[in-house]
Length: 306
Figure 1 (cartoon, rainbow, N blue to C red):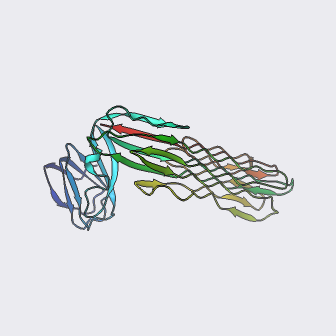
Figure 2 (figure 1 turned 135 degrees about the vertical axis):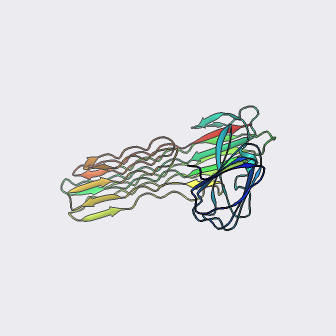
């Protein structure tokens, strides 16, 4: 629900605990010490949004709508973390890149909204010796990077890209297990700069144990994603064994581009990750050896603007 609508070239207001604020026209200025503002929505022609130092949270979400919608974050004293002028223009189309190749921007592209994710980690394997049980944890999602690139009026250039491979799920025998493998890096070159989204770490396998309570930590994302824009990920879920009566393999980690494999129980192989970069689930081994789910391969989603 829009709490306030401001029309005109510039506007100044005090933010008093509202959840969202809408501007129509050319933008405005936020001042005051509001603590409940979560999102600012701007529409219309180019303008500036100045964010006062008293606004909390800081940064906040800024959405600029003009034919299509893009998002950025703003911090005190700046316009938007993603400059508003970047978020204007005609939507040309979307490219979804998997595997490897060369990114060729659509003719006329000057600004890209890039969302990319590394390969998901594989879930761990779980063993059984016929009398005891075990459960493994899920693999982490790949790390997702979202960034707006380019300058209005300047043609954007592409380059080589590669989607990170999904990590293999761990295996098991009656006496040994393997952890899930880590997912690979996703990379792309745009305007002669390389951007990297790291893969997810593999889930932990586990050997059969006698009655008791055991929790196995989930896989964690790998470090080293390019430090720009917005970064998110989800670690793998824990594997749990409770007194030999309940075995649960941990779920794989998810991002907005791909779901992790769902958790499993009793006697089951881990479910594979889905979409782009979902982590594989860990295995559940109640008296039978089971393998972890594979992580999903990473990829890149690019929305192009002119």
